[in-house]
Length: 268
Image (cartoon, rainbow, N blue to C red):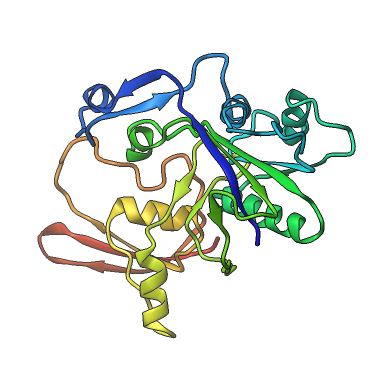
């Protein structure tokens, strides 16, 4: 039965207090601190540092038959990181290499691919993961995202942990995403998926500017109603930001005390 032969991790030495981030933006701190990579570190070097810390990796003469690298923040837009890891370990050119990217499931997907490789005859597979994700300034992700690397050496024997069974489900739900035109990951609350499933054929109301911005960015809104209130509250938040949204005005309702309700259809 396949299992985990060794596991290791690497966390950069530098720390950034979350209170310092919150103070800069005038917000609240989540407490503690987050790990920050040095100027010469990236997701690939973090993964390599973790892999080099594996106990007994290759010590018995059984070098990995495959190397898989998992990340959502590869330093290369087009270059295989797994091949670099194989070179660091001085593995033969016939070693199978694979990069798994562009998904928060990259790490577990790489492990699943490694188990498949073992089932296909490989003796050992090195899975290394690293992340240097950049959170959007003045957001909770700026405080949450930390830098680190992790590595697993899996083999056909049980080792330290036996893989008893595995199961995977694919569903095109909207969680976290980032397009090529976006510098920072975007996310949409999972409550929307739950609400849409519970509503069935009925409509789902999205309330609040912050949530509406996320829904607009994800292309989930069909209609939009804006309440124009003649009260000066300060700068506020721009609903559309720099994003161009095509709208068709369908209804205008004049309310009490100068409040105007404007209804639009989103044209995508």
